[in-house]
Each structure stands twice: as C-alpha cells, then as structure tokens.
Amino acid sequence: MDLELAGKVAIVTGASQGLGKAIARELAKEGVDVAICARRREALDAAASELEQETGRRILPVTTDTTNWESVQRMVEITAATLGRVDILVNNAATPGGLVRGSLAEASEEALLADIDTKVVGYFRCAKAVAPYMQRQGWGRIINIGGLSGRRSAAISGMRNAAVVHLTKVLSDQLGPMGITVNLVHPGTTRTERSGPMYAEQARQAGVSVEEIERRITQHIAIRRIVDARELGYVVTFLASPKATAITGEVIAADGGSVRAVFQ
Ligand SMILES: NC(=O)c1ccc[n+]([C@@H]2O[C@H](COP(=O)([O-])OP(=O)(O)OC[C@H]3O[C@@H](n4cnc5c(N)ncnc54)[C@H](OP(=O)(O)O)[C@@H]3O)[C@@H](O)[C@H]2O)c1
Image (cartoon, rainbow, N blue to C red; front, side, top):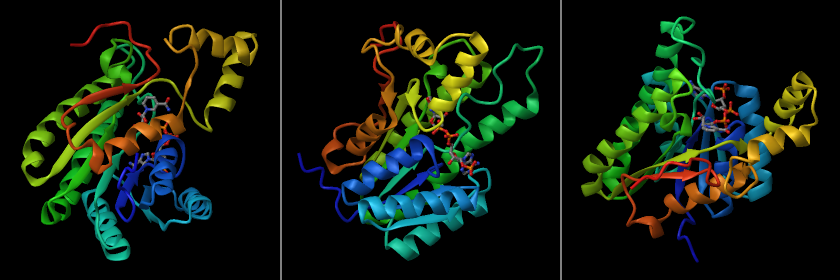
C-alpha cells in the first residue's frame, strides 16, 4: 500500500530517543521530513544525524520544552520556516511511567502537576500551535501517544493518559471539519534502547536471569512477546497517512494484547 506520505512534514516531540525516535524513523522511511524535539541538545543532534543518514530525509532537531508555550510556538515556526509546512504532529514527549507511582500518602502534588503539565497540557500546547497551519492547508494529522496506565488503577500518574484520551476526542470534533484527524495510540510495555539496561537491572535485583524477567512480562501479553518501538511506529505512520482518513477520535492500543478487559 502506498501510504501517500512522501513530501509531507511532521513534528515528533520527545524524539531524541525511545518511541519518539522510532516513530520519526518510520515516518522518514515513508518519505516524510521530520522535525524532532526534546530539551537536551546533544542527544537531539545525535538522533537527527543518525536518522538523516539512515533515511535520507531532512531531520530537523529543534530544542523544545513542551511545558513552555513560547518554546512550543518557536518549534512550530522553525519547522514551518525550514521544512516548508506542518502536516503531522506526533505528541509523545513525557516521562515514561510518570512521576507519581506510589501511594496517596507518598504522592507529591508538585510531581503530579509536572506530569500533567508535560503530557496533558504539553500535548494541548503543541496541538494549539500546529492547528492554524493545518487549518490553512485543510489537512492535518495529530497522533497522541498515551499509555495503558490510563486504563489501570496501578499508578496515580495514569490519570494523564486518561486525560489525553479525552483531549483526543474533543480535538477530533473541533478539528475534523478542517480536514484534521486526531487519534491516540496506547503503547504497552515496548522495547526501546532503555529496555536492555532496565531488564538487566531488574534481573540483578531479583536474582534471576534477564530471560526470566522477559518471561514474566510476556506471560501477560497475548502475542507472548514485547512489542518493538518500530512496530508502534508502523501504527502511528499509518494513522498519519491520508489512507487513515476514516479514523478520528479513536484510541488504539498497540501493546500486543496486554489488557484483558473488553472495550466496546
Ligand atoms: N516505553 C514504554 O514502554 C511506554 C509505555 C507506555 C507509554 N509510553 C509513553 O510513550 C512516550 C515516550 O516514552 P519513551 O519510553 O520513549 O520515553 P523516553 O525514552 O524517556 O523519551 C522521552 C523523550 O521525551 C523528551 N521529553 C521529556 N520531557 C520533555 C519536555 N518537557 N519537552 C520536550 N521533550 C521532552 C525526552 O528528551 P529530553 O529529556 O531531552 O527532553 C526524550 O526525547 C511517553 O509519552 C510515555 O509515557 C511509553
């Protein structure tokens, strides 16, 4: 299938590493020029040159803090000025797992507000900044990266992922008439460059092998393996394409089947 993405321009936030970088790579492989954003310049520049060499597309590193409106506006302006347009936004920048994982007694108000400022209000800021560009051209795609903690009661930080589901639906209604679709992808446990060292540390602490740590994770996943960041990138890339025009306001779990509940 030709995804008809060649020549489009995307912004992927939080793309110096992890899922954001993997998503940027898959978009670029489909012929998309990509502005990648994060706060730390060095990691961002390294990711940009790696992706540019690998894909042959223009990869523009723009240091951005999505908790700051001026910084987000600047990111969008620089992207449009340098790459010529803005067609696709992937909202991804956040601390994986969130900052508030303990009990109510241990949880701090500051950490919870920081989580929400980055993931919920940060996504809102980026959508607000790109919408006028997409509106003018009568076409756009916004994909929000959530997290399945929003469907579970395990961590207070999960509320940010529930909130971005709501934001997704509201924006899909508001922006749909302008040719802009807005969807959300929930990753489950996903293999990134952080996974190896993380599982090794968990294995060391538990006194078991890395294989045993992975077995404990995968026994709860229907496909019995950990989804790779690249595979999450495929889902996002399809949603970013003109071919996905029939889908908006939707929530798609790309986790290999780790939640037993039935959603209708
Ligand atoms: N990995 C998983 O298994 C998993 C599972 C469920 C959901 N998720 C979600 O997927 C997304 C990415 O997770 P990940 O595992 O790829 O995380 P990661 O490896 O820690 O990468 C996070 C990225 O976001 C950037 N970032 C963080 N705060 C930012 C801010 N305020 N402004 C701009 N950039 C910022 C980081 O760079 P700087 O620090 O330099 O800014 C980095 O590039 C998150 O929304 C996370 O909640 C991940």
